[in-house]
Amino acid sequence: MEAAVLPEVTSAGVIIKAIIILAVIAAIAGFGTFIERKVLAFMQRRLGPMHVGPYGILQLVADGIKLFTKEDIVPQHSNKIIFKIAPVITAATAFIALASVPVFPDFTIPQWVPLLGGVFVPSIAADINIGILFVLGMMAAGLYGPLLAGMAQANKWGIIGSARTAIQFLSYEVVTGLSILAPIMLVGSLSLVDFNTYQTGGLTSWILWQQPVAFVLFLIAGFAETNRTPFDLLEHEAEIISGYATEYSGLRWGLFFIGEYANMVTVSILAAVVFMGGYNDLGFLPGWLMIILKIAFVFFFMLWVRASWPHIRPDQLMWLCWKVLMPIAVINVVITGLFMMV
Amino acid sequence: MSLEEFKNRNVGQQTYKMVQSDPTPKTGKEQFEQVVRRAFKGELFVGLYVTLREMINALFRGEMHTIKYPFEKLPISPRYRAIHDMLRLLESGHYRCIGCGLCEKICISNCIKMDTRYDENQRKEVSEYTINFGRCIFCGYCAEVCPELAIVHGARYETASEQRASFSLFEDMLTPIDALKLQQEYDGFGAISPNADQNIKKTPLAY
Image (cartoon, rainbow over all chains, first blue to last red; front, side):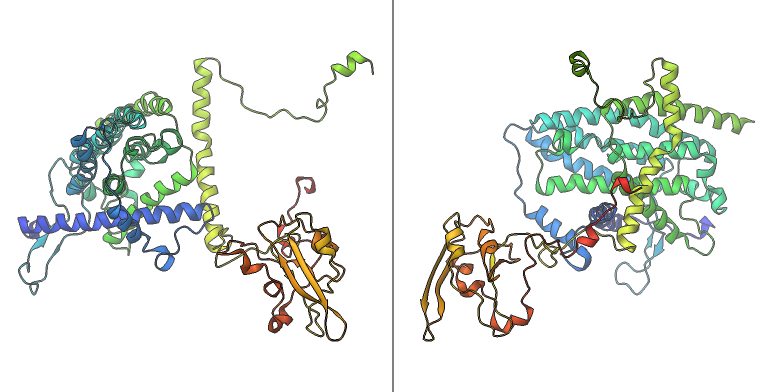
């Protein structure tokens, strides 16, 4: 890869990229709900949504219409401003995190397109040199959404939900950082592009083989980060109704939903780029297909786990994160460091 | 057996089996060992395997459980007592009811009302026959007592209707004359359901 040939990144290109990310990821997040319902249904030998469109594909549209036209309820004794801001925080931070993640390969708009012809659209909207730190920080900031939402809504289930958000946030964030520290030490950079170029040597050069422990730890922490099932304490219906989302309805609730699924996509991309070889070609398979396959696999794995495993209690989550995962992550970092020095 | 023995007897002692489970860890070391043992046992992957197997079974081996109800229906048991059917004689197409009035007599909720008269050939014919489905408790006595197998229980179990009159008249319950060939004979009260073979499963004793 000769970086010198790449055209200059203009602000028009970045804006187009931002619009593409917003449109595509929002669509994928919506479509993800459909995929999730289908996969969960198949794993329980049901059919899932079947009636809207062929094989229920347009269920997404029906759900969207429902969410958009629902009455927008703001509870009487809630803190109305924070109540209204909270879902926006979740959705916005999820999309901001995607800004420094390589989502699609870069391309140049052909010259015959009016106005925008010849504009170079980069693969990353903001190629900052602290990419992975920024993504993790943004996803951590996204936890303010559930936290504030639960506390603003004057509902006891919401309070419990936000309390659980706080303990979950404090527990796994340490593990996320420490687990991803070892690959960062190997690569010597925080930029996701550098991670990608580190793994150009085919299947054997994936960081996954050098850092299997870090990969497992990162996946576990990623599940906690996206509130997926073994750690879906914040809104577990059987225990706390809907947790932080109890009082939300309509579009505000939909924003939480989109944020959650966008986070799932982000974690899938991170796992694919940091550990599983990124968007490098593998044999005859082109890079864009490989990254899509890897993202799709991690996404499917999240749904698979949801269908298979029970979720755990808050105290078990804290026990797991502080007493098991964090020591393992620290030991992993130390051993990696020793190997690099020798 | 003395009274004392009788009172203290432990009935299940010979046949009950204790479930073998791991001993509860007492010390910190034992707890740690249990955690390590369970973490590397791979039971989580068994869970993943089970759900994936079910998904493959459902998608590729035709073991999907869903019945798309209004479009598909499971066969109901012949013992099921739904809305009554009035059957016809297969040879002549005439209704089987001979107007004996036994069903009206035996009906414990008094919902069957019938009237008969002599026709021009001095044969008894049914002039009025209604079942009040607001009262009917679907006990099935009328079908059991009928000497001609004329009134039986059919398969219409979706009994929501705009008005009760929709299916309480004799003509509504009678097999349509053009559907005479499709008329199902009543299997009787002891009959097994048509898909009984598929529902048979091995009991644990069989293996």
